[in-house]
Amino acid sequence: MPGQGSTGNVIAALASLFIPGLGQLLQGRVIKAFIMVVLAGIMWLFFLGWLVHLWSVIDAARFKGH
Image (cartoon, rainbow, N blue to C red):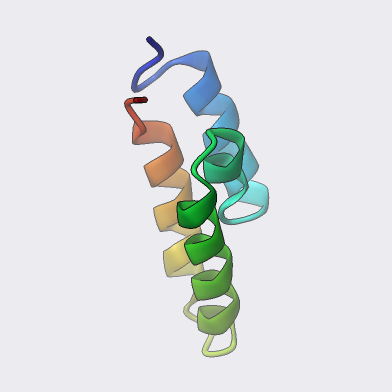
């Protein structure tokens, strides 16, 4: 079972670096991906989207699987 630090998580973290939530989507976590995209979109309006963006990358990298 893939875990933290696995190749899949590294790829997911890199994907989230470009688009918040994309890494979670690649990991099959659709609801979390949707939350990340919506929050990042709203937060970027207030120039705080980088917080959600960073959270998205870290969350994808630390995902332990099912």
